[in-house]
Amino acid sequence: MGVTAATKDTAEPQANAGLAGRVILVTGAAGGLGHATALAAARAGACVVLLGRKVRPLERTYDEVAAAATVEPAIYPLDLEGATFEDYVTMADAIVAQCGGLDGIVHCAARFDGLTPLEHVEPGQFLRVLHANLAAPWLLTQACLPLLRARKDSAVVFVLEDPAVTGAAYRGAYGLAKSALVALVTMLHSETARSNLRVHGIRPSPMATQLRARAWFAEDPAKLPAPAGAAHAIVRLLSAAGCEWRGRVLEAGDTEYAPG
Picture 1: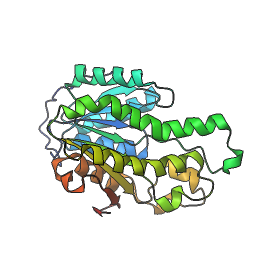
Picture 2: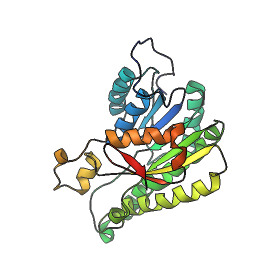
Picture 3: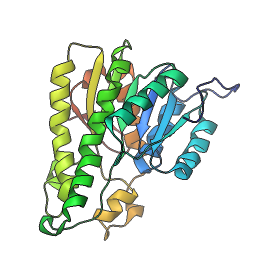
Picture 4: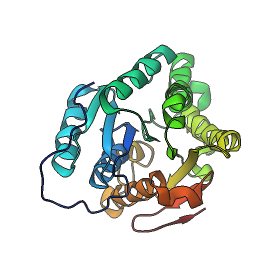
C-alpha cells in the first residue's frame, strides 16, 4: 500500500470533522462518485484508503485528496474482477499494518459495459460483470469484518441503483447485480443489527459520471449535478450521525438527503 497515515502540518480547518480519527476504504476511488467520496471523507477528517484497478488514476486522486486532507491518504491498487478472497484478506492485513484499523467501507466500484440484450451477452462477460458488481463487494466486506467489528462504531455503504432502472431491458448482469445488492443490505443488516457494525444502502440521483453516460448516451451531462452531493450524504452515513439510517436505503440528491 502506498502511504502510511500521518498527520500533516496545516492551519487550514476542515469543513467537517465528522470522520476525524476514522479510516475509510473507498473502492472505485478514481471514478466519479468514488473520487468525490474520497475527497469528502478526507475533508471530514478521515484517513482515506483509495482502492482502484489502475495505479495512475489512483495517483491523480491521491494528489487531490492529499491536498485537501489533514491526514495522508493511502493507495491500494487491486482489480476486484480478478481478486480472490485471499487477496482481500491480504488487503485487510495491510490496512491494519499501515493505518491501524478500519472504520468504514464505501463500495463505489462498478462495471457496466453498455446496453446489450441478455441473449447476446457472452457468458464469460456476464459472469465477470456479475462478480465485479456483487460477489466482489461482499467478499471484500467479509474479509474486513474482523476489522470493522473491532471498532466501536463502523459502517459499510453500498451504492445502489433505482430499481426501475436495474430491472429494465438491456441492463444485463449489471442490473441483476445491483438489484441483488438491495437484498444484501437487508440481509447483512438483519444479521448485524445488534452489533457495532452499521450497514447502509445509498441510491444517488442521476449524476454526471462516465458510467451513466454509457447507459444514457443521449443525455446531456451538463444538465446533471456532479457527484459531490451524494458524496456528502455518504460521509454522513459513515459518521456517527448516520445511525438513524442504519439498515435503510438513503435517497441522495445533489444538495439534500432524506431517508428512503
